[in-house]
Length: 285
Length: 261
View 1: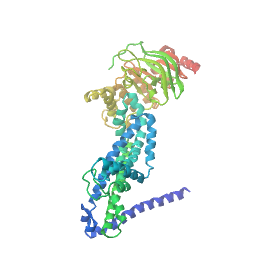
View 2: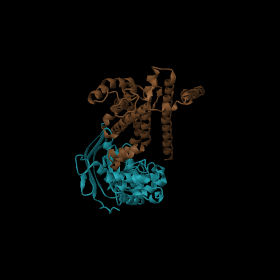
View 3: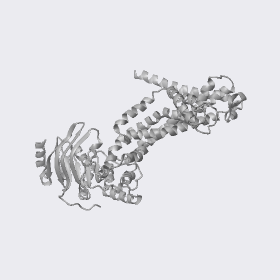
View 4: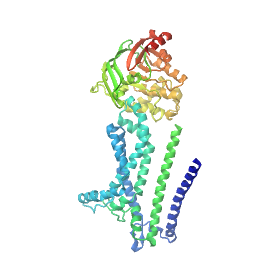
């Protein structure tokens, strides 16, 4: 029986790896014509005007980076704060409900966040800041930060859960205050989790489509301020696919896909490397 | 080095100490005066409340969920006898109490940092000493626990690479660096082999003139070897406080303990 299971698992692994390879090959194959026809320079231009023969995806790359980084900048400190609160800065009885809430957040469909943002956050921004329609980088990054918050909290929390209980009695007996214990001993010891949370949070922010599509405004421009409308690579693919399936416009999408694929792959490889290093260090000890 | 303390003076007065967790009584109505006559060793069967008694003296019981306690404990700390249970006292913060009443646990609990940082970091966070003073204190305490020669060339290495016995001596050094008055040791040799245990015992005998030591032990042999007084506990109460002359004869002690248990 175990032999069958083993064989089945082996095939499943090979199959999964093959799918990823096929995906990569497929994206590369469809991107190649851009290289062959010398349109690659056009691809990395600042203008997306397909009717004028300009297929620049730089605004989308900039939009994606601006959104992912700003969402991370909001969600990461918030997530870290929540973890510190749960692990001793806040009252003990509140820790469990907060973690349950965060766990619950992972189950909420993205479209719900987007929907709520469109009807609550966007009008709020539109009415309070006399700048644009409210569909903006700021609206998207605020919404996206809520979406990636559980990823960050749960990752850091899982590390702290392994570290803090072992240290708490020792540090308490030494007369070290809770805040000192967390910031000077536990957090440095949880550096793998802290880094992994940042990388995974970033990866999740880059990969999200719906929030950007619904809330960011989708103007293909380099954002000059937080109130500017932006378009991300993911939203760009979704928008163009819905309207076009021919021509260079269509091919340029594969370049977007390839960039996203490589970003996600890099995020995962980086994570794997850090994990490997963390494990090696632990074995040393 | 600390000056030798006044012998045979009371240093701990306990009145009606009662401790329970989640409503289950662990220590009941303990009334006791401990005087300064060498190491005090607590013995008794498992579950008799030895560790809880020890933790009452640095208020570590409060760290555990479901704790409730009553009674009064006075400890002789610099100045005078101080009521350590009085949580509203502004004279003695609980963190300061724990600095003055240091504790070493059953299994060595080194912090996940280097050997030097294990001593430096608590010293910095608790006392706020500057770097030069900390360096001096580090060398002083590592010499005091006879660990200096073994680690002086690898102070920056991870402390988890030390042997169990070395880690336990490092934990002791870490507590000593904070200049405590009282040392609480909860079966400090339980996880160590014979040789390492013997070494810790020798060390405690050396330290007994400078610190008031209260230790829990499972081993009668160990208790007889290091103790100045033996405190026998049973079912959350103090059954006997034995003076040195009462336990020097192993047969007599064994007979007494057989009667108690």
